[in-house]
Image 1 (cartoon, rainbow, N blue to C red):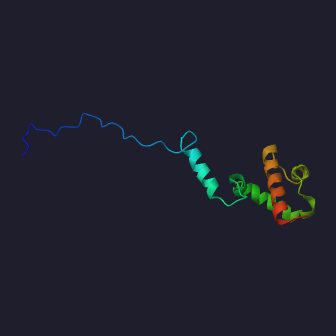
Image 2 (spheres, helix red, strand yellow):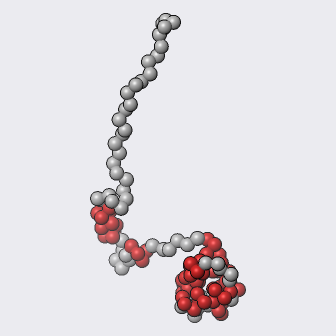
Image 3 (cartoon, helix red, strand yellow):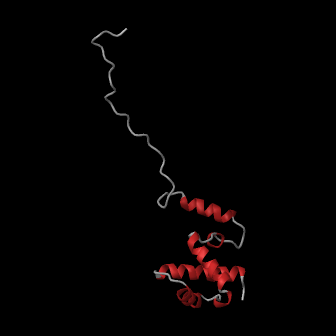
Length: 115
């Protein structure tokens, strides 16, 4: 039973921070071994770069596919030609966006609509 003058003591000491193992990242020493193991498990003829795709924003894909549906004969499998055509057919403010759309048109044309 607590008396009138008794108070619960607060903890005045601070616990040391919990040490955690370093997160795997570019500086982690074991990353090299993980990559070597994964490359040995991959089927022959496929490297890490070949199996990975390029992630593009949805608006780039949407505009590129819409252009290909409206003007299928205007585009080819050459990036430079497609870059000029995207510049003519759209009102892109930025060259980077125009180049990304043209790059996706080129990849899409090579994959789905061979000339």
